[in-house]
Length: 220
Image (cartoon, rainbow, N blue to C red; front, side, top):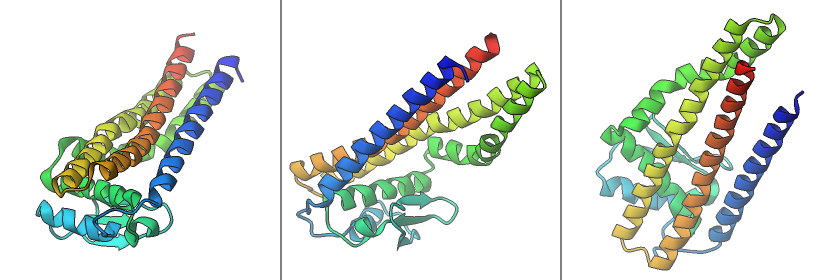
């Protein structure tokens, strides 16, 4: 294993752990700060859906850490701490997921593009390493190129995810301001959403670094 690759692993690990530490810290901090609305995350999500006239989107309680919008079923899942509790973290998290539901309902094109990439990325994520290992073992430049191309699709997916996540948070913050959430509480919600966004930025950065390393190896 080369020194360059060891450095890549080290840098990637530091970026990943740093982002995770920061997001966990912000989520925990604002989970103990109640909002003046008195609403739970589930109630806030339902209100935001009604505000934007987005219908037919069920909201369910998931497991620990399960916060997502599923375009396949057009449904929102929120973890227990956001679903049934009133806190800045709960409302920020719930409204962010509603932001994704609004994107889907309004035909937000980056989300549509991201969804179209999913089957390609699912295949590429599993196949690129196999192609790379076989290519190196057989000294086949063609297979190595295939591996790099497949991995590039995974990087593209990470990059396309960024505007989707940023826009969902923007929609959440706009809604919270429109319904009159106090500035101090909105600042906390923004901190939570910014921390969560950082994890996607970190993932995209790590993927891009890996791709640049692969391209560098190809040129040697």
